[in-house]
Image: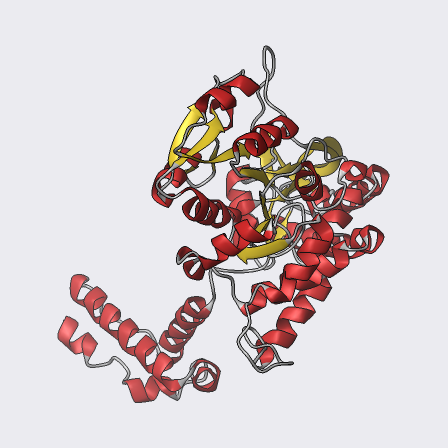
Length: 466
């Protein structure tokens, strides 16, 4: 019976002229449509052969519709815009800090045409790509020189390779951090070619621990800011001032990895105990490392600032080319740094700072408005405003808690996990958090322009629930 059924299958030519598929030829190309038709027909034949009792073949229109849906689904990128309602402002899985409009505009301008990436237009000679941002970084941090790579892990590895390759780098045992994605400082040191020399204990390290560890094979002293954990109780650590003093006494450079990368005072935003790059430079650190996509609110990048001698050594290392950033990142970083020169302007233009500065009362009113609208939607069991705690980061700066207001939702006729999955996979994609038996839509990480989108997305999914 299957052979007779197979004879009734439409041809590729018939299908490509069918209503649902014909417009796709111009939209995604003829080759893609033809490949999609052939793949579907091959699978359909196998299905018919498996089901010997199948006596019917779908119509040309029905088959074309199925193929069109499959092609369009395949053309949809897995990298999509997301509404971040998790309450984690620097969410690694969601791309960390959103960019300022000025940074986006600069990227578009530089992306559209060729750019002076490594050519000095005044002299016509080759230049360094760092030149686009070095002066800005030096102005903001007080450093003599600067370099930029793809992220702070890359900055750390490159610095260790350039300054510590084959020799010892001294680090307090309490600062041997592990960050998300199996990034462990001891492993990074090993890969860089430098050798880790641990001093002190997990909870207590003293200045004499550094002094006693220095030998002729010492390449550098390194301080690492523990941005994703805290040790409390019976503790003691060594200040950067003391480490710098020891380094200068023995002629050993000091590397200060401050992690999240504050270049302006964040205390007014409720962010505490985050070291400032300028303070590290002023204290005497020879090299300071930090991220561009966390507290700076810029694109993913690893920033290296410090003395001219050390930065030149780092920039000349062969690994620097493997870790370099492209013209789009440089464009976005430059625009972000120009905003940060004026903290008042930055507060109004950089999205991360806008979200941090949103008054609690504003969040409450927005949460109550959304909850009131959702309470009227069929399929929503309960929606109410609830005061909660948001976080500056997940893997990084997770201890920085910020007061917030959420919309707490109970769904009728569906599990919270299932409903949350539908929101995540819908358009727009909305990602919240399930907590204490409720779905929380945390507005601390949501700009006001997305409130209406969230309301519509939740109502749409609730009404479609059986």
